[in-house]
Each structure stands twice: as structure tokens, then as C-alpha cells.
Image (tube, rainbow, N blue to C red; front, side, top):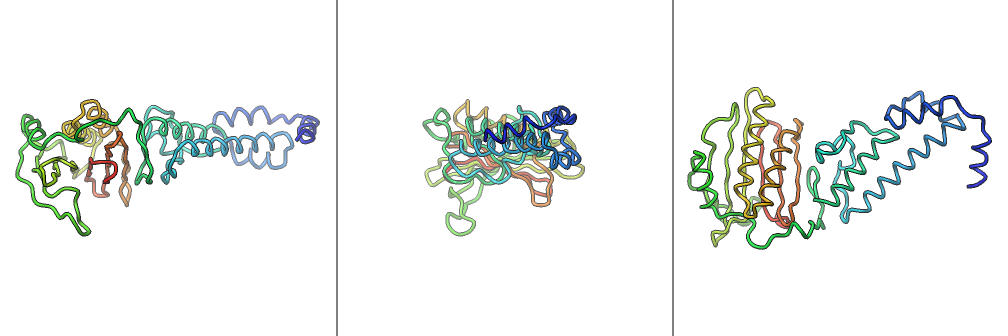
Length: 290
């Protein structure tokens, strides 16, 4: 190692090295830079060290999470969607792009398990998020709250408890619909009850049709976030989950296969899916059951 460093110091300085450092920091490394570095004894080691640093940082970030990292989390383009307070990173390049992505994973891993798509097994929410008592308010309390906002509620249906369409509960406690269209959208809330009448899951559905606008999507996010807050028994966790839905729903992408995101609040899992046609489904339930 010492011989290699001696050899590097003995090389004549390259006039492009300083500008290459600037472009590494600014994430503007070009194909010409990489071509030049492949033969330059001064710029080549610099670019190589930047790449190795990125790789080491990624491995360190992955090592801080107990379970296998969900697919796509280390894609820098996903970082701002999952952690809105972090800097936006739009591409992977030697330099700071992967640094920001790794920082996003470290922050997420140390706060709350959050990832697009399905989370792997073995996720352990922070102990401070654990709350004694039921996850959800009783159906009657949920209905009383939404009726006060002019929602209309109708009786629910029985549900299968075995087979491919099995549900965690035996029946729908009821179905409540938004009082009016939200521009070109509507929403409904369906508490799922077990045989003892306890709510074990809440399904919230939202639909957009016609010309989708930023306003209609934001208003639907507000409604579904509010219904999330109305469903959860613990006030602090209810506020956090509702705020997450309001933030995450407008960021779901329009993809042929849909887009989805999940988050754990202790033993509560919040799963939000956008279908290709513009409808949304939000499922609130125990982390071990979804």
C-alpha cells in the first residue's frame, strides 16, 4: 500500500484533477471524465476511491437493518418519495448521489420501517411505538365520527375466514361513504370485525376518475388521511399515520403495474396501493397479519 501511494505522489499533477473533484461533489461526472480517468494516473485513483467509498457506505447502511433490504430502497430516485425531508437525489453516479441514498436508509432504519412494496419478515418496530390496548376504535365510534361529517353509512357484509379470499375478521362493521364528490373523487371506510365485534382491520378506499389533477389527488389524500386518523385508537399514532397517508398518497406514481408503499408504526402496519386506473386502497392492520 505504501509503495502505491509513493508512486501516486511521484506522478506529475493532472490539470483536470481539481475540476474532477468539483464535479464529483456536484454529481456531474461525465463520460469524458470517466474515459480520461481510465488512463490518467492522477484522476483514475481519485475516481476509483469515490466509487469504493460509495460501495462501503451502502454496505454499512445495509448492515444497520436487521432484515433483507426491500427491493428498490437503495435506488436513489426513491429516497425523496420515502423520506420527504431528505435531499432529492435523481440519479446514481460516483460521488454524493449514493451517499444521500445511504443516509436515507440509515435514517429510515433508525426511525420506522418504511419501504415501497412488501417488507420482508423480521421487521422490529421501535419499542416506543408499542401501545397497549386495541389498535382501532370500535366501529360505532368510527361511524359516529364520520356521520358528524355527513358521511352516509350502510350495513356491511359477512366475510370468508378461510380460502384464497380469507379475511382477518368475520364481517364488515359497515361501509361509510364521503358525503359528496371531492372534485372527481370519492372515498369509503370499512372496519373489519371479528366474532367478538372488535375491529381487527380497517380498509379505506378512494377513487379518482376523469382528468386527474393535483388538487383532486391532494384532496383525496386529505380525506383518506383523516379517515386513517379516525380509525386508530391511540391519538399519537393516529395523527402520525394520518399525516403519512396525506404525504404519501400524492407521491405514488402512475405505473402500469400500480405503485405502493408501506410503513410500520409499532405493531400497526399501514399499506397504501395505487391501482393503474387511478383508484387507491389503504389497509390498516396488525403488522403480523398483513
